[in-house]
Length: 238
Image (cartoon, rainbow, N blue to C red; front, side):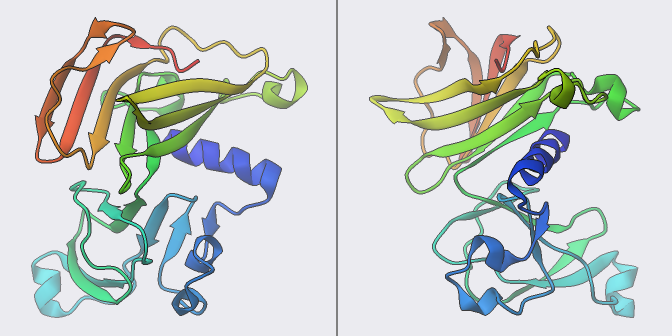
């Protein structure tokens, strides 16, 4: 999630929007969240309900902990771990969560860039590794998201204008397509290692006949609403 967090920090620096924000910050039209203090938005796309209650002895033996959360109405939410759409919104839901999971949900219509670093022991050593785009479709089968990129170490983004902001858009225009567009770019050049290698699309309703990238057929796997596409040789975000 480092790219999502890094991009959110960039927006915080120029817009003043906090990284961790109350739910009403994003859903001010829903008064029920004005006094909710047991969950929060992490950036504009992720809702987190932390484990606050002390587990009972029975739950503790099963390595479970009770969490209560309420999802805003009027939009789909995806469980971050199983990628399934949550069916209940607007009312409190209580769930027993295992030790290695949190109550984390992604707002439909979001695209989250994920750094691939399974074999990396230190973040900075793989900061420019390959990227997977997680696309969480809304009811209109659309989504969008951003990626802020720089060297991850220096202040050159400010002193030398060395950065890039990329916008990702998934929508329909005769066919479904995913577009990557550099909307703001200084002197930053994407390293050869920093490519989009995989696109995972959640909320997809049918198995496609084919998936193409610039006219080249891509390998893909479709299973139960999830379409995972492998891009040959990767594609530079910019």
